[in-house]
Image (cartoon, rainbow, N blue to C red):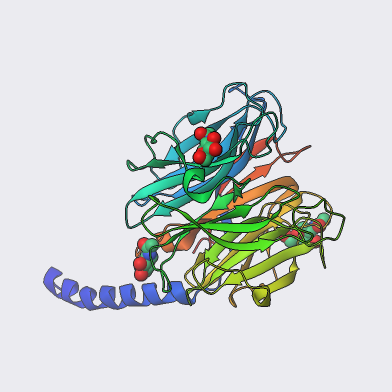
Length: 387
Ligand SMILES: *[C@@H]1O[C@H](CO)[C@@H](O)[C@H](O)[C@H]1NC(C)=O
Ligand SMILES: *[C@@H]1O[C@H](CO)[C@@H](O)[C@H](O)[C@H]1NC(C)=O
Ligand SMILES: *[C@@H]1O[C@H](CO)[C@@H](O)[C@H](O)[C@H]1NC(C)=O
C-alpha cells in the first residue's frame, strides 16, 4: 500500500479516536491517584519562619498556579507576627518560584490574618481578602482588607480597607477560595464567605458586583446565642468554603465549631447569590466527620470534591472524597492523602476546554509527622487513576 493510501485510511480512524477520547473522559469513573507531591513550605526550615499555616491554592485566569500561606515568623500562634507568603507555578505545579511575600506586619501579634483568594475571570484579576487585627488583641478596630493582582500574581496592589464600605466588624474570610458566580442569579458576582469572632461567630458573606471595586454585606448565618460566650454543643458555624452548583445556588461547607448535632460538617445553601443563607437550606452531613477544622471543597464539572482530616477527634488522616449527587451522598472508597497529622486544606482546578486539564485537581494542605503544622504540602491528583 502506498503512503497516500495509508494516510487516507488513517485519517478517519484518527478522527473517530479523537471523538471517542473526549467522550470516554467524561464517562470515566473517578478513581483519583496522587501523581505529584511537593512540600512548598517547611516550618522552622531554611526560611527561618517558625510556622507556615493556612494554605490557599488557586489557578489564575492565565492558568498559573498560586499558593499562599501565613508565615508566622516567631511563634505558631494564630496571634503571631506574620507575612503572607506566595509561590507561583507556570507549569501546573511541577516547578515553583522561590517564596516571595505580599504583606508583612512587622512585629504586631494581631496584624495579618488569611484569608480568601478569589479569581475574577472576567476582569482577569486575583484578589486576596484578609483581616487586619481580627482578634482585637492590643489593636482596634478589626478591618477587612484586600490586595489585587492584575499581572498573573507577579505584583500586588496597595491594601484597600473594605471596612470603609462594609462597616467595622470582626470578619475572617475563609480560609479558602471565594467564588465568581458563573450561573444566574447574579452571574459575575464575587462572593467571599467567612466567619466572625468567637462570641459573634457565624458564617457571613460579602459580595461585589463590580469586580471588587465596591462590596456589600450579604448572607449571615449567626451562631446561637449570638454575641455571647458559647458552650459545648452550641450552634456555632465557623470557617467555611463556598462552591457554586450548576443550578446557580451556592453551597457552603462549614466548620461546626461546637459540634452542634454531630461531630461532622454543616452544609447550607444560598439560593439568591449569597444574599441569604436560610435555615431551611441547612443540614448536617454525617458522612463528613470532622475534628473542627477548615476543609476544602471544589465543584468541577458536576462533581463535588471534599478534603479534611477524616476523624472526629484529631487532625489526622487527610482524605479526599467525591460526590456525584451534589453532596447528598459520597462515593464509598475515599482516597487517603496522608494518614498522619494533617489540618487545613484547599483545592483548585483549571477550568479549561483542554481534555488534559480536565483530568486534574490540586490540593494544598497542612501535614506533618508529629504535628500537622510542620509543612504545607502540594498534591497533584489525576482523577482517572492515571488514564
Ligand atoms: C478601616 O476603615 C475603618 C472604617 O473607616 C477604620 O475604622 C479602620 O481604622 C481602618 N483600618 C485600617 C487598618 O486602616
Ligand atoms: C482514615 O480515613 C479513611 C478514609 O480515607 C478511613 O477509611 C479510615 O477509617 C480512617 N482512619 C482512621 C484511623 O480514622
Ligand atoms: C468554565 O468552563 C466552562 C466550559 O468550558 C465555561 O462554560 C465557563 O464559562 C468557564 N467558566 C469560567 C469562569 O471561565
